[in-house]
Length: 107
Image 1 (cartoon, helix red, strand yellow):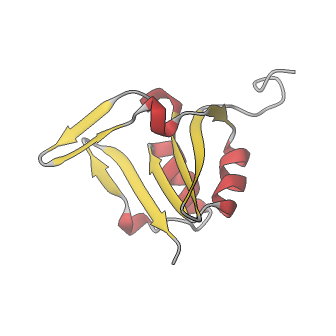
Image 2: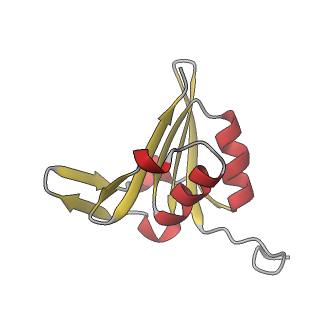
């Protein structure tokens, strides 16, 4: 059964890393992968090397956020999910050329 047939959509690009005792989760909306956004002095390049290991469902992203100590998100969908799940405060979302970018670090 494909993801579309079972009701899940794998429209999130995600990669997890372990660095110096931290669990880093990088995720973006699939359609943003490889794109660059600039606005004034702010810029972000949604690099495949950093944001892509696999395309995943919303539930996989939610489960992965539970494990992460550092989260880096780009895109309307992934940021909306993180806000809804309580990982990101909507007032702390940065927009670069209209694209939401949010980070979380657990201390």
